[in-house]
Amino acid sequence: QVHLVESGGGLVQAGGSLRLSCAAAGPTFRQYTMGWFRQAPGKEREIVSHIGWSAGSTWYANSVKDRFTISRDNAKNMVYLQMNNLKPDDTAVYFCAAAKTTWEYWGQGTQVTVSS
Image (cartoon, rainbow, N blue to C red; front, top):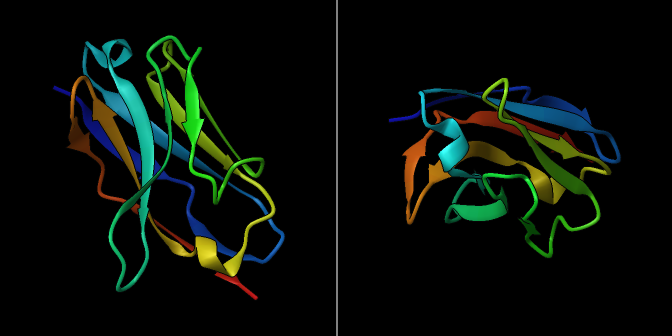
């Protein structure tokens, strides 16, 4: 089992940057693919990015490609999402999640608000 806690959200102006962190508790963290999702008001939750267990494989949604960078530190049980050149459309609650075959563990979310 993996327990996830996100941090690093906040209010930022358009064009600014934030770094989200996800702390994972559990002995098998490195066995999981880790992902970041977001959910804006009135919209469905969408996947933003994910990273494989070895950090050698990453994927990004087209809407964040070239602006966001996902990384993980298996020694510290941490996953990060560096978000640059933020836009008002990036405003959402961001969730960290862990998957082996399905996204089975979720954090509580952290709010990101980008003002124009």
